[in-house]
Every structure is written in C-alpha cells, then in structure tokens.
Image (tube, helix red, strand yellow):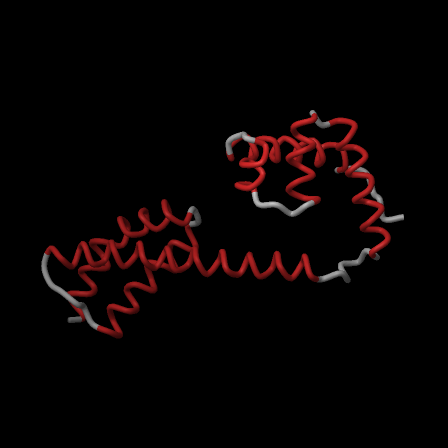
Length: 165
C-alpha cells in the first residue's frame, strides 16, 4: 500500500498541483489541497484501483479545492458582515455621516443620471442588483457596469482626501 501511494504521489503530484493551481489561483493553497487529498488517501485508504484511481485523485483534488473556496468565501462574508455591523472602526458616526454626505454630493454632481439612480438604489436603498435592473428596465450587466464605473470615480476622487475631521 505504501509503495502504491508513493508511486501515485510521484506520478500524479505535478498534474494534480497544476489542476489545483488553476482552480485556486494560488500555488500555496493548491499545494495544501493536493496534500490534503494524499493525506486522506494515507489515513483512509484508496477507494478504488487501476485507471479509476487517476480519476478519483482528480475528482478529490477538485472537491478539495471547492471546499477551500467555499470556506474562504464564508470567512470573507463573515468579515464583511462584521465590518458593516462594527461601528467602532476608528471613526465616529458623525465622521462616517460626513464622509457619506461628501460622497453623495460628489456623485450627484459628477455621475450621469442613470449612474446616480443605480448607485443610490444600491447603496442608499440597499436594493439588490437584480431588482434595480428590473425597476430601471436595464440588464443586470448594465447595473454592474454603472456600479463599477461609479466606484472607480469615487476611488479616484477620494483616494487622497480625508473626511475624518
């Protein structure tokens, strides 16, 4: 069994690592995914033999990568929620309101009417993009493009300004 695993590791490791890197986009995480699959094979044994073993390794690495992505997304969502709910981020509520007012004033002045409607519905009314698209009778892609352009303009304008006074 150990010789079989060693042979599998040596003959398939590079290909599995390429697959995991393509899925995850990070070499270290890909290495962790492939290692986890081989660790499971060592501790739990191999479920099949022959050609099916190659397929099992590929599917196992793919599933491990998916699990890692789901875990990362869940962690990022929780961090975003924590930041949204956390009012003690170094700024007072008044400072946050001042910054929001500056953003709104700039947006009303610089955005196209359609971009302003999309932006205010998304961030002012907290509407989902799908609902915005439906109400404005435009595609969701158009909504995403308006939001991306709006955020780009805001980042460029506010990157060197500090409204924490």
